[in-house]
Image (cartoon, rainbow, N blue to C red; front, top):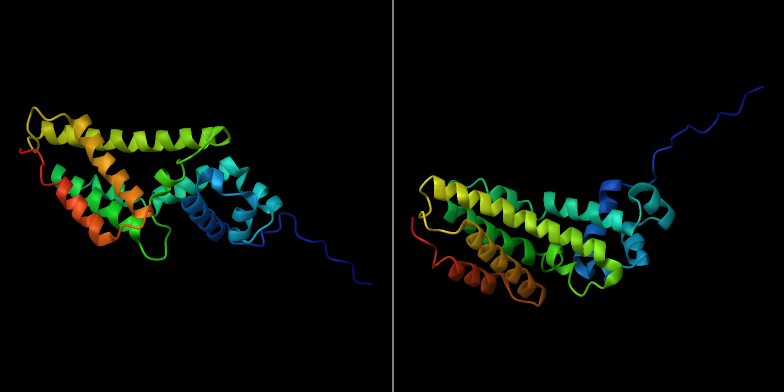
Amino acid sequence: METQRKAPIGRPRGFDVDEALEQAMRVFWEQGYEGASLTDLTSAMGITRTSMYAAFGNKEDLFRKALERYTEGPASYGARALQEPTARRVATALLNGSVWATTRPGCPAGCFGVQASLAAGDPGRNAREALITWRNEAISLLRDRFRQAVDEGDLAPGTDPGLLARYIMTVANGIAVQAASGATAEDLQLVADMALRGWPPA
C-alpha cells in the first residue's frame, strides 16, 4: 500500500517577493505613506494581508523596504553622481538625474522621498522621520564630496560645502515637487541648467 507523501516543510511563497516589493514601492511613491492603504498595497502586490505581513512585516516595515528599493533603483543616480570627477559634474549629474527620475515615463511623477512625506500626520510620524533621515544623509554625502573638492582645489577655498550641498538638494527636491505637479522634463531641465549657471569658481 502506497503511503501518502507529506507536503514539504517550508513551502516556497506563491508570489514573487521582488515584484511585490516593486509594486509596493510604486504605491507609496504615488500615494505617500498615509495615502497608501493596506488594500491599495496588497491589491497592487497581488497578495493577501497575511502574506504581506509574513513576507515584509507591517506597513511601516514595508515602507522602509520600499524606500531601500527606491534608493537602489530609481534614485541610484545619486550614488553615481558622487563618483563624478569634479564638483560641478557631481551637481550636474544629480540635478539631471532628478529630472530624469521624477519625469520618467511609466513611473509615478515626483520623488518617493518627497511625495511620501507630504501631508503626513501623526500616524505617519515614523515614516516621515525615516524620510527626513534619508534626505539628511543625502545632503551629508554631498557635503562631504564638496568638502573633498575644496581640499583638492576643485572649489574655491572660501566655498561652504554644506550650504552648496543644501542648495543643490533643495533645487533637486523642488524639481521633484514640480514634476509631481505636471511640469515637463524639458521645463525642469531648464531649471536644472539655470541652477548651475552661478556655480562657484575654483
